Every structure is written in C-alpha cells, then in structure tokens.
Image (cartoon, rainbow, N blue to C red):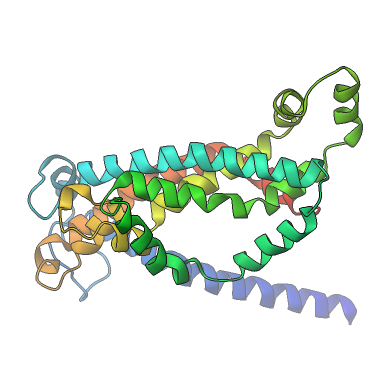
Length: 283
C-alpha cells in the first residue's frame, strides 16, 4: 500500500511539473515560431505561421530604421552589461570574502543591515536614484546606469559568502604563517578554489543589466533611440501603431537577445550549479 502511494504521488508530481513546463515553454516556443513567420504583424488566428521566412532576422540586423535600431541597442546593452559584470563581480567577491573570512567590530550589524535592505524591492528607490543622477547630470547616460547597477551589487554577497565559508580555514592560516597579506591570501588562495562561485557571480551580474527594463526606462527617457538598451527598444516596437508592422521583428529580437545568455548558461552550467549549491551550504 505504501509503495502504491509513492507511485501515485510521484505521478502527480510529474504531471504538475509537466503542466508547469508546458505553461512556461509555450509562450517561448510561440515567440520563436512567430519570429520565422512570413508576415510582419501578429497573427492570433493560428499558432504556426502559414508561411515561413528568415526575413525578420535579416531586417532587424541589417535594415535599421527610425523604429528598429537593434544593432545599436545590442551594442549599448552589451557595453553596459560587460562593465557592470566586471565591477559587480569584484564588489561581490571582495565583500563576501570580508564577511566570511575576516572578523571586525560591527560585522554582524552590517550583515543584518544588508539582509534587511534586500527585503525591500529595488524599484522603491528608483525615483530617488533618478533625482540623484539628474542633479549630477548622469540621466540619459550609460555611465550613470553602470554606476547604479554596480553600486548596489555588493548587497548580493550572501551566496558567495556561503561558498567562502566552505573553504577550510587552515589554508588561509597556512598562508598567513608564510607572511601572506590578506589581499594576497584572497587572490592566490581563495579565488583559485572558488571558480564555481565566480562563474555564478559573473552570470548573475551580467543578467541584471541585460534583462532590466524598469530602471533603464526611467533613466534613459530622452526619447533618443540610439541611447536605448535592447529592452527599451524592443518594448517600443509593441506600440499599438507599430505592432502590425514590427511585431514579427520584435519576436526575432527577443530570440536574438536570448541566444547569448543561453550559450553562456550551456557552457557554464556545471560551475553555475556548483556555485549555487556550494553557496547554499552556509548563510
């Protein structure tokens, strides 16, 4: 009786997961097939297009106009994401090392404050951030976006700290006995053993500016399309007057945006999973 209950429970769990997977995958699959459609607008009368074409990809990549400037948006987003990724990764790893391996007055208080700040949604501070950037003339500026994305990255140190907690203390103590400084210990002892969490931090830091829409929309509000990121540019294609002409190109742009992230996840999947599981051992 117990065995049959387990089988029934397993079947129910798998059915629920299958239903959730279908609900999650169907919109993505529809986006992909629509990007290969032979028409420009949205066709809701049928799931698969009547005609197939790669024209949408060629137009969004090589035929820019006043509405669609995907190569420029992609370049802007990539530049912002690369700089944010580098700066944020350094911030997160350094803060995580300090909180995990060093002991100083006020350490626990700072950790508690960081946790409490993480409880508040980030968009609550966006208006204040906007006026701060406006006062120093950094609105409608990619540099201002890099500063803000990178400045708040340090609060996300908890996963990296959990990973550093798993590294044996004896390794650092041996380095101290050899006369190594704290910085040298961090760079030559801890970081070489932390490849999984470094990969996790790099991918997480890259995803923030790559996928963000709300903050980018607030800051880049001049109306100059050449300053936009991919998220803003593609959203603009969903204007009611533009959907009949640009919806299929919007779908093609959505697929192109997802390709670099997909490739990055496939290549780094092993280390990414190890970083998550290793960082969840201790908090």
